[in-house]
Length: 217
Ligand SMILES: NC(=O)c1ccc[n+]([C@@H]2O[C@H](COP(=O)([O-])OP(=O)(O)OC[C@H]3O[C@@H](n4cnc5c(N)ncnc54)[C@H](OP(=O)(O)O)[C@@H]3O)[C@@H](O)[C@H]2O)c1
Image (spheres, rainbow, N blue to C red):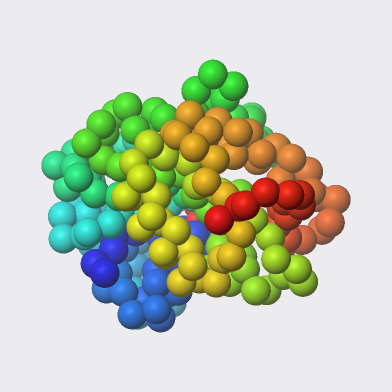
C-alpha cells in the first residue's frame, strides 16, 4: 500500500522503517525537506522525505505522527483534498510542554485531538490508534514479556478494518475497538498515567494489558 507518514520524529521514522519492511511504499512528510535532512542526516537514511502535501497526495492511507500542538498545521499543509476519502491514522497526543515536564493535555474530558482532527477534516476517516505506547512497542509488540493491548477509535468501519490489518502486520493480537472517535478522549487521557509509569519503571518499553472476559476481537 502507498502510505504517507506525516512526521519525522521517532514515531514517524520508526513507523516508516517498519512499514517499508512489511512491503509498503512509504513517503515521510515534513515541513521542509532540506532543513530536516540537514538537521540529522543519518536519522533519515533510506527514507523518502517529501513536503507534507506531496507525501499525502500520492497516498492511499495517511498517518499523523506530528507533535500534537502542530498536528492541525501539519494536516492543513498536507491539504484537505489529499486526505479526503482516506484512512487517517492519528497517533498523536495532545501534549503541551510549554510549562515544562510533565506536559499537560491541551484538550481533554469533553473533546480530544482525534475529534478536533475529524471535525477539521470531515472527509477523512480518522482512526486514533497506537498513541498509548512508545514507538518501539508500536511496531514490535512481541518485545514485551506478555501480550498487551492496542486500541482503535473511529467512526468509519472500513478505516478501522484497514487500521486493524496494519496493526496485525506489526504482530498485534489484542486490538480493542473502543467505538467512535469520541473514545479518543479516553486513550489520550491515558498519557499522564503513561508518563507516571515511565518515571516509575525507568523505561518506556512497557504497555497496558487488559485482562478480563469478553471477545476483544
Ligand atoms: N515518541 C513516542 O514514542 C510516542 C508514542 C506515542 C505517541 N506519540 C505521539 O506521536 C507524535 C510524534 O511524536 P515524535 O516523538 O515522533 O515527534 P515530535 O517531536 O512530537 O513531532 C515531530 C514532528 O512534528 C512536526 N512539527 C513540529 N512543529 C510543527 C509545526 N509547527 N508545523 C508542522 N509540523 C510540525 C515536525 O516537523 P518537521 O519534520 O518539519 O520537523 C516533526 O515531523 C506526537 O504527537 C507524540 O505525542 C509519540
